[in-house]
Image (cartoon, rainbow, N blue to C red):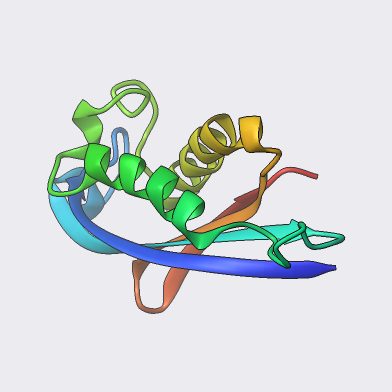
Length: 123
């Protein structure tokens, strides 16, 4: 099995609805995103995925969230923009963009602080 990981970062604000604590108020993070792709074999070029293809898809999503209030971006207008929900959203959106090329994210990890992260993957 082969595995590659692409990392990126963005800055955004959010608040948690129905949360009993300071995170119910608008606040910001310097978020990190790590996308891991796995494959049992390499393509004819000797790659799991072209980092350029992965980077373009990730950049499209970063443009949607960078320097914004996440609560104003669907689906986070309805669901809390927690790290867990962000990880699932990035995973689903990357899969939608990359699956026509036969590429599927294995795991997406979102960090909201250097010592806190959440991950999402499909079994």
